[in-house]
Length: 131
View (cartoon, rainbow, N blue to C red):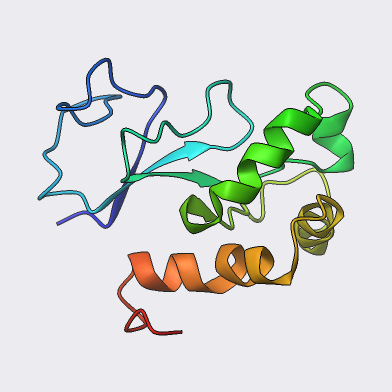
C-alpha cells in the first residue's frame, strides 16, 4: 500500500481522489502530495492533499516564482498540511537553505515544527498524534 502519491492537479470533485495516473481510493492512499510552489493551493475540500516545500521560497525559486504575500499568509493556516520536501540531492542550493527559506516566511515556531517533523511523522505513522 502506498504511503503517499504525488499529484499534478487537484481533482474536479471532492468525491474523487486527485489524479496523475492510475486513480486510487482514499482507503488505498492516506495522503496526496502537491508542490507548494505550483498554482492552486491545497483545497480545503480535499483534506488528504498535502503540500511539500521543495524549493519554495528559496533564493533560486524566488528569481522566477516568488511566493506572493497572500499565498504565504494562507500557508500559515494550512500548517497541518505542509510537509518538508527536499528533492535532495537534486537541488540548486545547499539542503539547509530550504529550511532557512521556510523560516524566512515568518510563520512561527509551531508551524516550523509541524512542517519539519510532526506532519511527516503523522503521515508515516511514526508518532501517535499527541506530539
